[in-house]
Image 1: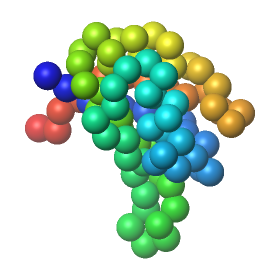
Image 2: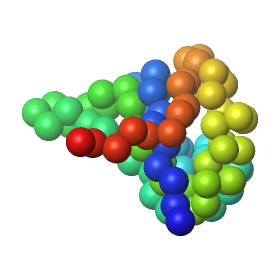
Image 3: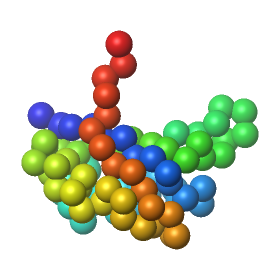
Image 4: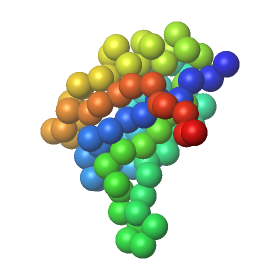
Length: 83
């Protein structure tokens, strides 16, 4: 079963492909999407990455939480479900 991760404090210039490539080093990525502002189309500085398995998601969290990408320390944790 896949696991969805929240990724915050992203650099404004990062795109979906770069986000995917960053996480692919730590397992199979099902999807990677940076959330964009509806009106301007610019990044809102966070996104979601879905990893194929929970073990791959755990590896990605351990490796990438507080890691630096393009000069910013990103935050990675398991996404909370919307209720």
